[in-house]
Length: 254
Ligand code: GCO
Image (cartoon, rainbow, N blue to C red; front, side, top):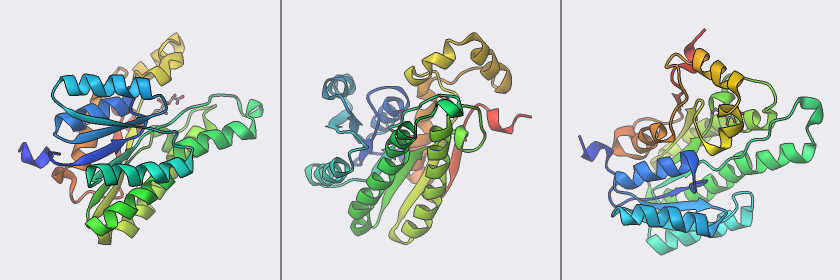
């Protein structure tokens, strides 16, 4: 049983891993035995997170770069594979949100969200595939969202990017399957993260989440860890092109 979910000997890059869902998934993967490479923009924050993991006897390294700097994405994937001799899994999770009524949206803001949440993931997936294809195995995991499935107002670029990831996850799954690479999209529901503080602190939104979601509460970041370990490990070997919804039942509730 433990072998089924083991990531021992594997190297995984997790983007957006200084905090929130990225750090929670990285922690779970490190606990499953992986050497996790934490990505984010601030080296000091990343180093602190890596230090906390290492203090627990887990394996962690950092790679500080902005996922919307596409040249940096290319350089860093190559450097990680070179440094560690392999790259088994990428969890492409870094993301931002921008919430405005439609008529207040600047086109620039739309493009900024897409660059980080979607195009950066495309570039990183492509570069990871460059390493994984010769190895004839690999796991690519996107952090999508229930917002790629259902809708709420104001989060136009975020929803476009998350639906885009799920769609691209399927084309990549089909194209990369012959190379032994699986590609899946985890679709979180409403999690109690820093990115969502404006929502968790809004009494109306808080009440909405609690009533709309059958489990009746926000999720804690740790509750996403198992999904990442499952898709990265042998347990998920026959799962590809899938959207794994982790939303407390929100999207199946009428
Ligand atoms: C929003 C939230 C998102 C949600 C996400 C659910 O404004 O919709 O900020 O980050 O948490 O869409 O996965």
